[in-house]
Length: 196
Image (cartoon, rainbow, N blue to C red):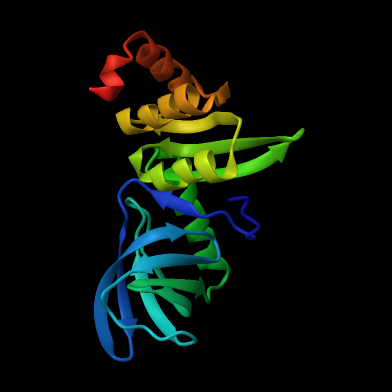
């Protein structure tokens, strides 16, 4: 889970759609995750590794991003693509990612080693869309602490994940954003609201 990628992967509470052009055929897909250097998308279209595909998408109201992508991996109907972009598209992508994180429509979950402890950091939205990565960090990586100072929005599913982390896995929640701290205090006062 300790991600050695150059750019962090951004996950979305609701996957944005992407229009795809490949080999003279147009289709659509969903963006599973995104970084400054590429994306993972799900599509019924048959794409080929090593070939370029045209991708056009907007992230929660951002300006339209039209970028060629080199297909670099495939698992079933999931394709990994590396952007072939110039500086203007890089700026538009970065601005769109930052705006989505700020509004809580996108999330970053990462695990870091700090003084011998594994710390899970979450920025942006803390929601049910993070469940798989969150549970992997708890059960496979073995985090002992959470840093949620960068959380900008959260929902009941996100709070329930935190309850699992603290009550079942003994994880301590340390650094907290104001919005998280208020919601967490309320959730702890009414624990049945998260499970019922």
